[in-house]
Image (cartoon, rainbow, N blue to C red; front, side):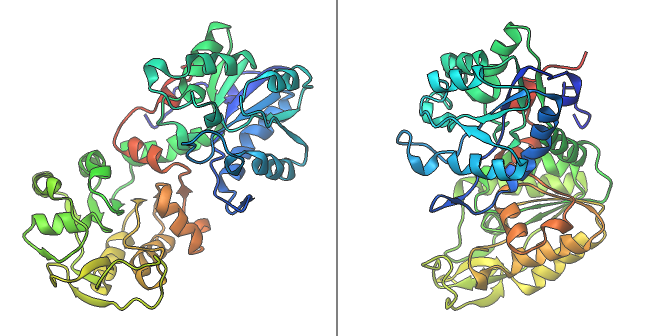
Length: 413
């Protein structure tokens, strides 16, 4: 899997052709302003390559979780503005909520080689997320009608068989066009693929976050691949309870206790190490608001959390143990925070793991989502080998699942 046998933007000549590029411009907005443009910057190499070849570049993406129909708060207008600045040329924005309507058709017809347009939020059509068997076939065909070729560069959406991610390829192919992946997809698959299939050892995987259920298959798959598996965050307490520990009012998934026991057994059989917290920072209740800096904490043994206390972060002994485990690693994959890192008082564990990764000379891969946010916030982004742009997609990749956005690209001849 690590070698990607798929056509890339380097495998076809885009000169004068209309190329539809599915990007991941799902950026955070506050009062209509972009607060983090990492995903926009990540898309630039592919877009610049197509512009320089003289392609007519048609960009599309979703933004936010459009549940109640289109709304201006999730329009891609701010993205078009930021893209224009970054590319040093106008990116024409088609604000039509229909996405592929007359406005888009006319704008594409008027394009000259090297022009760039951005379509409105694909989810405004409401046909983007329907289940694969009925996945907005009509919408996918309309998208394909605008273009000659298609490039998927949206790793953050590559695990979803959506109209603009996977279904569109069949209509592009039907008219003799090329379906390729962009540079960002290539890079993601190279790093995540190599980490899973061909890691330089010792290979340490760090999993955090709240729920065991979200990471069931990842835990199982990584145990077969890694040498040491470190578990932190809310999911650790289900493992602690499975071992007979007292966890107070900490987050727990009682339906997964047997699963955790099985995983601890599996590690033993395979001769792998699972590290669990030995001490825990506890509070009387969940902080409200979440970033309340006045919340009172104490450190207790993880196996003996008092009945009226809740685990919120890994404690100092655990921090030391986890940092030591990372020191001699050659490959580290990290997905999920160690505690409620949004709160300054409960962020020490997540900060310490980020710092340990920044100091190691291992290949360090951050699996998107909250871990990426934590690394960016703490200022360690430039010290990591690769920060994935897709949380859900990187998790599914680490599970060993095939991603629709990758599968649907053309194979190399």
